[in-house]
Structure formats: C-alpha cells, structure tokens
Image (cartoon, rainbow, N blue to C red):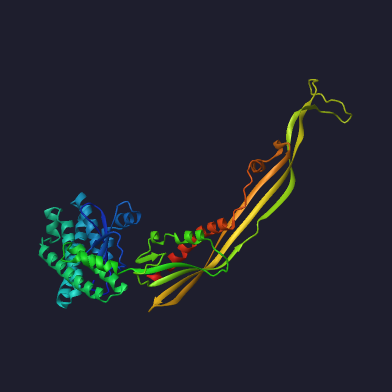
Length: 431
C-alpha cells in the first residue's frame, strides 16, 4: 500500500487489549478543535462494541474477507480473537499467517521508503508505522507458541525506534508551529496550535510547549463586534436594544470566534455583524365580537307513546308504553376576539474590517413577529348548553392589550433566535 509523503489516508480497525475497537485515520483535516483521543497526529476514537456499525464490521465480515479486501489489520484482529477461543482453527491460522506477514511487509517497506526520503515531515508517519508494528505484534503475542511458529512470528523490540521517531516528530512539529505562528495571522496561528497540540501529545514535557500552545490559541481567534442599527425611522426603547444585545452569542459554541456586543477599545475587530433594523410595524388594537346560540338536548323524564288516534299504546302484556322525553337547553354567547401584532424586519449584515474599512461581504434578510391573540366569551341563558371550549372561554378574565414596547420585546426574543440560526449558517464568513 505505497503512498505519497503528503497526501495519504489509511483507515484501520483494531482491537486493543481492553477489547475496545480503535478506528484510526493517519491524516484527518484538523480545524483546531479535537474530540476523541489524539494519538501521533491522528484522531483516535474509541467506540464500544455495541456500536451497530462496528458490530456489523466485526461479526458479519469474516477474517478471510478482510484479507481479500487487503484490510490486513482487521483480518489479524479477527483471526487472533478467534484463535484465542479455538487454537486449532486451521482456517484462521492460515488467514493470520498471511495477514500478519503482509501487514508487516507493507509497513516495513513504507518505513524504508520514508527513512530514505530524509524529509523531516515523515517522522509522524514513521512513528505511526512503528506503533502499528508493535500493536500488531502485541495482538498476536498471547497466542500459543505453536501458532506463532506457524505464522513465522519473531519478537522485535521497537521501543528505541518508537522513542526516536516520536522525539523527531515532536521536534519537527514544534519547529513548524513556530514558523506558522511567526506569520502573525489567525489562520496560521490555528495551524500552529494544531502542531503544538500534537507535540504536547508526543512529549508532554517538551520545553516551552505550554507557552506556545497558549500563545497560538490566543492568536487563533477572529474578533467580531455585534451591533444594532435602527434605520426604521421609529423609536426603539432602550429595553429592546438592551435585550437584543444580551443575545449570548459566545454561549453558542462558535469555533475560533469571539463575539463582543459592546466595543472594547483594546481590540481590533476583524469583522462587524450589524443587525440592521429597517422596518417596524405595529398593528392597531383590534377587537371583534360575534353572537351565536348553543343548544343541547337533554333527557326530561318519560312520556307515553301514542298511536295515530292519540291513544296510549300497549305492549304485549297490556302495559302502557313509555319513552324518554327530551328538552332543548339554549344559551346565547357573545365571543370576543382581541388581536395585536408587531413585526420587525431587517438584515443581518456581515462586514469585513479590511484595513480599517468595513466591507460588506454578505447581507441576510431577517424578520420576527410577535402576536397577541386573546379570546373570551360572555353567556346568557342556560350554561348547561355550552360546549366545553365555550364554557372555558366564559371563565377567562379579560386580558389587557400589551403595550407597543411589550410587543417589540416579544419580537426581540424571536429575533435573537433567528439571528442565531443565520449566524450558525454563515459562521464560516467570520472565522
């Protein structure tokens, strides 16, 4: 599996001594934020055996199939696991012999090529290759002596090579991080931070690494000023603007972005995001009413059943026939509807502070509405005729119309939510 020095991606699945599954990618695109376990410049994620996809991979794909797919480490792991349970399984011994030696040959050939290249950036991969060899060896080591003889197992002490390659990888990364940090911009600072974090993983006590990580981290952020501009021609209360400026942008987990809602004279802002309020509409207070009647049929005792001649009918035993008598209950209802609305329209403008001049890079429309809707009812007549909903309306206390400022404050809450959504979708513009 020969690869170039710079652009390679190798995925492997292996089982560690604790029977956790390890997924390893030699090179992942990094953005300065790590989740999972960072190992040798790679991101290692432990996934428990119950994870459905990996159960399928390990239980449904045979070691032979993995071997045919050239997934040698997967085949080694699968076969070794099977042979721990049944050391006499000849098929698994054959697969293990092929996969183990092919994987080792592949790593050793790659190591030879990397060592001959003489390029300093190869030390991370060299370290990873030695770790693979050692991990693969450790996976097979617990098997019986007869099995190890049949697969040509020979123990090799990789400690010296691992220590040396780890040290040289850390030295290269530290030097590269310093060069990137010296460029002074936030993009190179993020790359420098990435390098220093990897150094910290390799050699936690590397001289000066903590200071470099802190320095690179601090210089990696873009500083964004969030502000409000009222261009609607209508007065906005102080409470409205104050509520919007309590938007809590920093709590939303934006990567590599620091937001301020009040300008700090000590900071040179990279970007400005302006909530430009262009239009405010507040409807008049609307009140409508409608009168209607609700009825209900209820039992009202019994009455005789009469024939066509007006005589009481008899049953077969000569008894008078009776039936349930009903009466209609009636209630007059006046239903009142109160309504008021407020709409705030505008744009969220993204501005790049390029050389002190604000250059608009994008403008997104944004709108929020608050509504006041209240319904109540008055009833005159027999309230037993009312439906459950109408009866509920008659118990309500009349609510006063909210003020214009109250309506706008409600709209401000919705405006903040929409602002979050637009910023989330466009955060790449200010990173």
